[in-house]
Length: 401
Image (cartoon, rainbow, N blue to C red; front, side):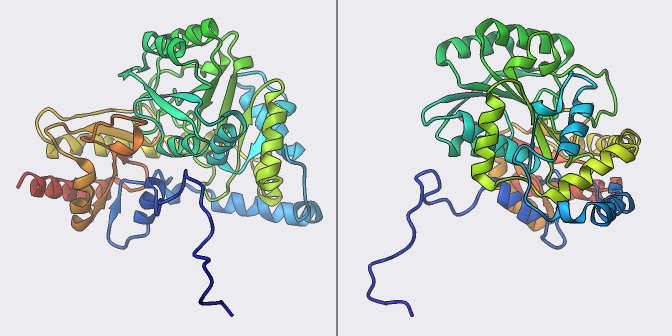
């Protein structure tokens, strides 16, 4: 029985989370479950693209052949079978061995793990303007100070990056070079080389987040920055199975070299011992025995049609002077509305009309452009996208009075 006279009023909370009742990530995931709302908010892969029978077979095989192993504790770096398969996949662009792989519970854990292992309160992290909102949360939770790198249509600007590195001596630089979240922009090969030259010249470590890189449906493939000469040793490369297999199976990995991998393993052990063994073994089976590339090609073709549908209809409802990106792959496009439109204030009107997006302010480390928004085109078929854009247009009409 609780003593009603007790002075206890609750558990102490870290200053990082004190007063925080929600986050942009939680809010956008909640929107996915609202009945009747067409969501352009979360980056939820098209459910019809899931290879359910293949995935079921992988789990069936694991329990039929590795059942005791699957249900037991395991090593923190990850199951050998999965580390080997991950290394083979990464090696298609960057030579990699299994001992250079740390398995994580999705790439979101990888982002948090990197911050937890590398950052001290007050450290600076350089990020793109805009950047992935959950990375902002993860690094800030470790006490880091995030500073945005000026960006253009080709991504982060090399000259600005070098100036910020020399001014702030960052702990690391965090970039999403391929189909960036939220903008959809992909750095061309020349820009990647220029970024690599800056990083090599200054010695600044790079955390390269690459969850969308395989989802290209047009344009020329550019090498990961980690794969450029000299960059592998100072880059942590983050990959995930969420966008090419299933986000519900939380499996990703970090590729790196040197003592940092042991540090990451120790940090992972402290966080949760290891990732789900059942999921690891099923993913290893999937990578080894199924034509993953053929599946990815089908998904990319599906997403291209949906990108085309959104890119064709969206401009017609936006105000004069507004701009949108036209991604060559990935899951998102970025709209800059201008005209004094605060998309955070617009969102409740949009939800009332039955459509949702993510206001752009959440994606900036500081000084946000509040007239921006991120829209995902992958979740809904073209006819639903058309209806959602029409609803967004009605919300904009209400804003304009």
